[in-house]
Image (cartoon, rainbow, N blue to C red):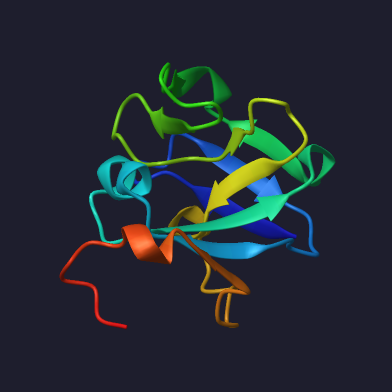
Length: 122
């Protein structure tokens, strides 16, 4: 079992292994949502994630102009936290929200590479 949390510690969750896809996404939406060059997300089945504390402190934003883009943050500290895809088939877990450095393998998928910021080196 892997534990995760937000920066202030009010939102706490657990994820049961195995982890699904580990994706680096370089699209402009993920850059805006994370404030970085790319988003690092792990995908798991909804049944693999349990909220231990603070689920009521999560604020979700679904980008109206996008077919499937959403993000969720802790309302207190603004840290990205897990959220379900719009169809609810997967949970997207920001890799940095996991408390331990458990994702030791390189990502098994890089998406939107052609949309990367100009300062990202190949």
